[in-house]
Length: 273
Image (cartoon, rainbow, N blue to C red; front, side, top):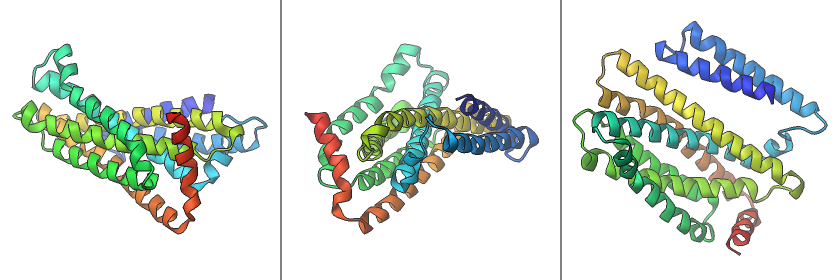
């Protein structure tokens, strides 16, 4: 666990320094240390009698790509969410309560979508639903990249919020189900803990990346609103990677037998009961 904490800290230091340039020594050095320590962590876990993260969880390529997609999607969603709160309060001059209420469309659309996802998963593969979610999220994030200090809530924020909420709802539920649905019972606790860990780590990573981009834009003289739009390009990149992973997984699923979708459906039916 100590290695994991040090990896996270070093990676955050590297990303934070990236606003001065991704190839500068303050950015490259801690990032390199993080990569080396991550490799050391993998070796320790492979040899441990009771590993924190059993490597068997990652040997399944579908589950491994699922973990990576969950981390990237969390980073894109919550990095964007963080920047939008700054836009609402600094550019649109909303108070804390008003800014919170302004984000209700995102949460509302996500809650409605999450209720509908089990029905979609009964008819389509999880990877196909994730693909639709990533596409929807990308549409909302691309819209947000047009933000500047002259944007209004109705013209520049409300529509993207709904798209982000729908995209998030279509992404997180099938990812969780596909990751946990086929896990052996003996590894269920480790698999669930690993999912939570990658989502939290992905959130921190995404916020750090987008804030670094925002800082670089501001340092270059971009106004506050436009700098937020520039920074959200980072969320586009993260979510585009989710889309690629979902497309690859869908192709793998297409080559597999129909029974491979059963674990996800079994998990969903248990939750509904």
